[in-house]
Length: 222
Image 1: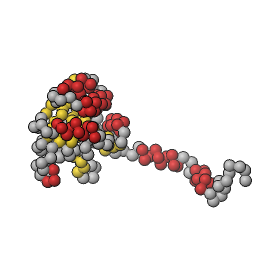
Image 2: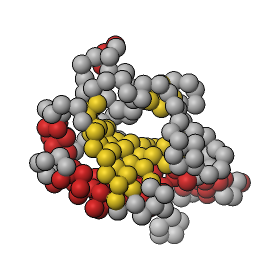
Image 3: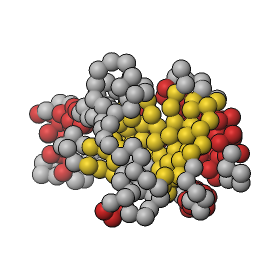
């Protein structure tokens, strides 16, 4: 046996793998491609690039499953000590994020950096140089009915409290976790394709009674 061929003869794992590829050329590669290309109304991932898949004709919801960041959570939680509020700013992404933080009276650098990052990414997704950012401290059941928004695309992120609820293809109600970022297709998005029903979680009944939410919503400005 030549040097370097130890463990490659009949009966070895390497031999059997070569034999399988000879019998079914390209089979394993084909299987991997098919797995990646299976259409899905809802896609999710741990990288922000997953949001780009909202433009697929088969996708109605893209979720970036990012982890909770302590500095963001601390800054966001301090805002819930104030009475319920709604702040809305329409501007270029960086300026909208800056103005939104200025309107909070106490400038939170961690929130500003995150607002700017999300606004910039959404501006690219929606091909809109101007975005509308709405930050809400929610304590009631606003938007409590399942619906599809009358917009093209909408980004939602809950910084504190229970996240947005949505309905999966099997009819089961799912709930986003804190800090996750979702982009939904609305009824105004061009073309056919799935739309995913969603709502704000009910805060007046069940296990969520008494809880508050800090929610960021970003839309395109025509």
